[in-house]
Every structure is written in C-alpha cells, then in structure tokens.
Length: 296
Image (cartoon, rainbow, N blue to C red):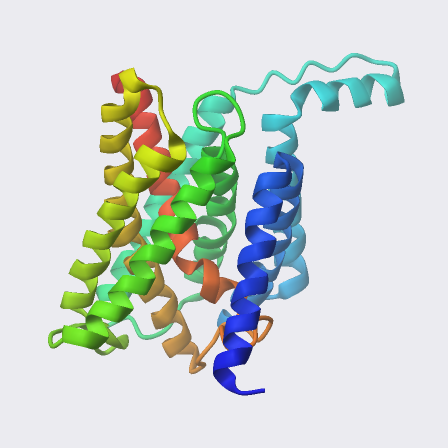
C-alpha cells in the first residue's frame, strides 16, 4: 500500500470516528476524547522523557473527576447516596473551577509561545515538562469538552464547527503556501510554512466561519448577524492560535529529534500530531466565550 493511500484511509477513519462520536451523544464524545487524552499524554511523555504510567493515571483522574463533577453532579450524588446511604452535597463552583483552570492553561500557553520563539531555549527542563503536561496537554481537553456545551446544553455543531475551521486553515495554508508561498514563516522550526500560507489559511477560515454560521449553525434571524461575527472571530482565533499550536509541537519534536509524536495513525503520525492545533486553540475559544458571556 503506497503512502498516499495509507494516509487517506487513516485520515478518513479518524474523521469518521471523530464526527460519529461527537454526533452520537455527549457520553461517546467524552469517552473518545478521554481516550485521545491518554494517548496524547503517552506520546508527549515519550517525546520529553517523562514517566508514562504516573502521567497517564494523573490525566485519567483529573479528566474523569472534573467531567463527573461538572456534567454529572446529580448522578454522582445519587450514586453516593445509594452506596453509602449518606447524602453528599457537591458544592463546587463550576464557573470558578474553570476560571482557575483557564488561568493555569493561558499562563502555560504563554510559556509555550516563549519556548517557541526563544532561540536560547533548545531543551525542555524537568519543571517545564511537568508544567506543559498539565497546562499544554491535559487541561485543554477539559476545555474541548466544555466549549461543546455552549451556554446551556450539548451542541455537537460547536465542536464540529471548530474542527472544520482548523482543517480549513491547515488545508488552505498548505495549498496557498505550496502555490505562491515565498516568505518563510518560521523556517528553523517548520521549513514548509510560509507567510502567504498563513494569510491564505486565515482568509479561507474566515470564509468557513461565515458559511458555518449561516448554513450549519442556522441561528435564528435575530441572532444571525451576531452569530456570523462570533464565528468569524472564532475562525481568526483558530487560524492564528492553531498555527502557533502546530509550531510549538514542531519545536518539541525538533528538540526530541523525531519526525512524528507517534505511529498510531499511518501516514499522519500520532494523536498529538492531529490534535496539536485544537488543544492549543480550545482554551482561547473558551476564553472568548467567557468574554462574550460577561459582556452580554
């Protein structure tokens, strides 16, 4: 089997699995991204030489506990009542919890950006490895699941729309860069990325955001104009921040001296290779939603 066909098949399987799990129910969505998280943690630990078992257990517990508390509070309380015959009141301020987690994640993201652009940093210290594990790898998965609920309830269109924007940016950044790209974006990290490709990716993502809002999200008429502005903003965030996420993972791989984070997807590499953009984008999209909520 040639490399192109292998890449096409594994990519198709990934997309079908992703969309099917998101559309079927929020439980399958949580489960799939929980599995993706564990695989990503494994790949990251292999990349930076951290202990895998402890890191995977920590990620599993954090993801599981926060998901249960935030989305299944009543079910957890009922389970505790049935098993212990005592009533436990889970008085957790979910908004405050996510604000704290968001603060940790954004600070880590800024540290990652500094790591990307600093020529002096050509290795990852032990403390940085642990910080990145928490704020760059684990916590973003919590925001991926959280933003899919929008303001009230689970809405698969939100997370699918975000993935479409990221895929649009990646695809057209490659096409435009390959066609007319002359000026390198960050050659020492990713020789193939160009400024023209970046601009092309942003432009087509903005178009994608407009189309998603108008024909896929299908907002009611009174909110359609507002929805278009929101999704165009998300498109810009996905393009710019997503490109940074891709470059940061490229630098981690360059420091580690490897081409891909893993081999689970033939022709594509690892799960971290596929999700490097979305895990870096998700906290910023969540921040954008928070700003919208408080402003409105």
